[in-house]
Image (cartoon, rainbow, N blue to C red; front, side, top):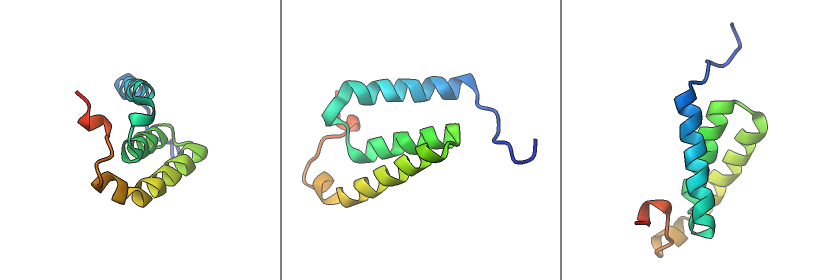
Length: 80
């Protein structure tokens, strides 16, 4: 199995699906850092180049929006 990513456990898939559902429910309230973290986890899980590129782009957007976070942008962690 050299060169193959490790097998993905069902619990990992369930966690990614639940995270996606939370982000979808949050809509525009979901912070860019939270979205970047989700996309990174998804890319790590799936090992798909396109997902990795999306995650990198989201991380860059999150880094660029750091001043917005300091100004009080709401993230999922802030939600009740």
